Length: 186
Image (cartoon, rainbow, N blue to C red; front, side, top):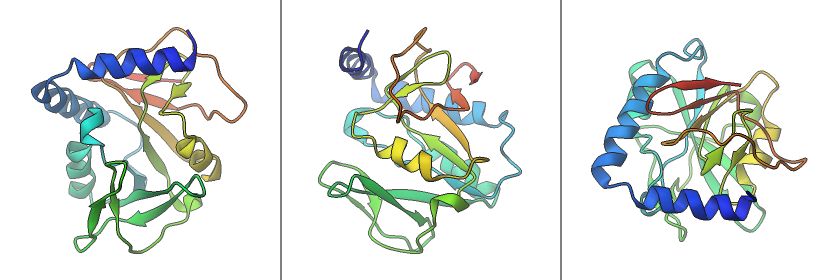
C-alpha cells in the first residue's frame, strides 16, 4: 500500500476510537514506556497531541517524565520553513493552539536538537522495521536528522505494525514503538 492510502486507512481507524478508548489506550502506552531502556537519559522531547486528530494522549507520559525529574522539551512547528523549534517545558510555559490545532509553546528556553536524548514521535502507521508514516509534511524526519547519533526515537501507536512500508531517502526509522500491549524494538 502507498503512503497516501495508509494515511487514509489509519486516520479512519483512529476515527473509530472513542474518547474513552483514547484515554485508556494512551494510559496503557505510558505504562508500557516504563519498560524502555531510556530512563537514565535527561532530555526528553514529546509531542503534544492534536485532539481532533485522535492522537495518543501524551499527558500520561508527561506525568511519568515529571515524576522522574526529566527535562521535557516540546516542539513548535514553523510551517513557513518546514522546521520545528524545541522549547523546555516549564511550569510557566504558555501553550497556545496553532491554526492547525497543535498545542505549542508561545516562547521559552530553546533547546538544540543535538541536546535531546529521547524523542517520542507521533505517527499514523509504522512497519516491523521501524519505518513510520506521519502526516506527510516531513517535520519529524527533518528534526530527527538533526539529533545526535545516540538519540533514541520512540514511536507511539494505538495499532500494530504493517509488514513493510515503502521508504524514501529522507525517512528516519524508529528505535522502538510502543503500543498498548507491547514494545517493538527495531
